Image (tube, rainbow, N blue to C red; front, side, top):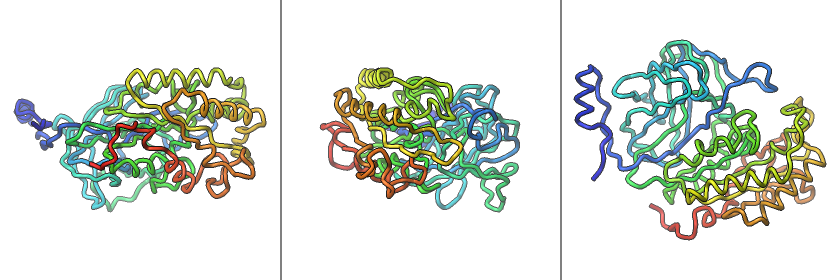
Length: 415
């Protein structure tokens, strides 16, 4: 029997309180279809600017996202993680390509106050969506709000509109950013149990260097391969992320439970980590930090594998792509040195041969210049010699063996 989102008792309670009950959406399962991993906002003393004001008031944020699987209804998750004050959401809406804004409510009301450090999930909205649909969310902030649920490398354009501009296409944006805030997750109503793959990594997983607003990150391409099998791909990349240490966000070890293991229906995780552990020490990002050791990196990988295997989750590890000349000629150069290249080669050799993972995808081999293996292939390089471009990200996704990822028992038939 299908479950309905609003029970008759709750509907009566909401009606008595003067709030309109949310529309009932039949849902046996709620499948996560998109996430944006939150990270702490930083101050002016960091080597890179935050990319948006630290406080917003009486504005509407219009932000785009793309589904990896579809369903008959949606729910949104609002994050005040890393926020230190309550977050008052005045109103929220979601729209599809027709740009008709559909109200999104919380316990039958237009807004909600989210406690510091907490998340809030919306009522269900009757909105059929397909895999690969692009949606827009509109979030009105009536009071002063400290930026939280923040994500620096969105590879999307966020519009900041004055006042409550939900559903108003005639209002010109006051500002535009390529960062995200507050909207952290989209779930879809499904008749099938959740089936989820998470990609965790740094800016290469986050898609730095890909075309803004085009969904050309490697997890986007992997999502297109897996959608016919009814498997969602969630991108848990954070620019600057490291295995061992916090940086632009919590380390992979610290956030693995929240961003990966807690996802419903988790079948597998693809890890691409290590380039910043190797490259940051001695660079502008960590000028006084000692180099990472191979032993520390491999121990961290083994710990992540142990945590995943304890949940019966498969682990695919990606080798670290080459980065000679990375960020050269910019204020951020220093990622590469011959010593760092030696450590990268040693780590990749261990990833390939240790037998610690359920599978390995050799991103290094996919992306390197055959004539200069310590460099990215020019045809796959975004131009900064650290991040691939659109063609490189597509090649990365194509290199992932789906049977190794999902296991031999996964049916080849599409749902």
